Every structure is written in structure tokens, then in C-alpha cells.
Amino acid sequence: MIKYVPKMTSVVLEEIPDRVSLAVDISNCRGNCVGCHSPFLKLDIGEELTPAVVDALIADNFGVNCFLFLGEGRDPEALLSLAGHIRTAHPVMEIALYSGREDVEPAIWDAFDYVKVGPYRPECGPLNERTTNQRLYYHKEDITFRFWRKGIDPNV
Ligand code: SF4
Image (cartoon, rainbow, N blue to C red):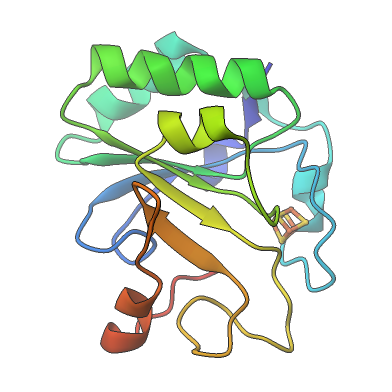
């Protein structure tokens, strides 16, 4: 089961370049970032993110063209199933994952258009700083430089 925090759901413009993203905060984070910005996301909180909920969120946010999972929870099969649902039911949507891990499994690279990897380290800074240890990939191509060029704050 994948859970999200409904009240934190929002439409964002900066987290994924050139996309209007519907961002959902996923709880049960298995990360352990030293500079964690949202420790409560490590807890088993929120509501289940089902395919029906995904459909309703997309319907309620007309114009979004990317579904962004902020975190991946602890149920990889359920996460991949949700990504597969979006791919099938909403083919115009791109799918993005912000993972706090150093790397993700091949199945995740294949299921998501965008994947961000790397735990947040305060001494390295977020994606928009050239010293960052984090990376954002689009179909496995490193596009982290897009944040440096624009100088935007991806709010990690
Ligand atoms: S990925 Fe890291 S910063 Fe994000 S909630 Fe998990 S521990 Fe915190």
C-alpha cells in the first residue's frame, strides 16, 4: 500500500523542468537523510493512494501534465502498479519520482519518465546548487543542469 498526505497535494512548476506537476507527498519514507526536511513523512500517516484516488486527483487538477511522487514509500510493487495505472489510464501524463535513495531498481527506472536520486545533504545543497549530490534523470539522462541554468529552487 502506498499512502499520501492529502493536504500537502499541490500543483508545482519548478520540481520538474517544463512540466506542470501534480505533486503528492508519499509517507512511510524509508530514507534517512541527515537534513530531512519532513521527518513526519517517515511515519505511517495519510490515506491510501489508489488508482481511483489518482484518477480523481488528475480530474480535479485540469492542465497538469506530470504526476510527481514525492517519495516512494515501502511498497515497491504498489508504487509500480500506480505508475502503470497512470501510464495506461492517462497516457499524456508523464510520471516522476523523487527518491531519497542513492539509486533505484531497473523496474523503477523503466516505469518513471523522471527519477530523482540522492539523499538530501545540507552540505551539498539541493538540486539548484552545483555542489548538490542529488540528480534528476529524464529517461536515464542526467538533466540536473537544467536547475543550474535556470537557477530555480526545486524545494527539496
Ligand atoms: S527522502 Fe530524505 S528528506 Fe525526504 S522525507 Fe525521506 S528522509 Fe526526509
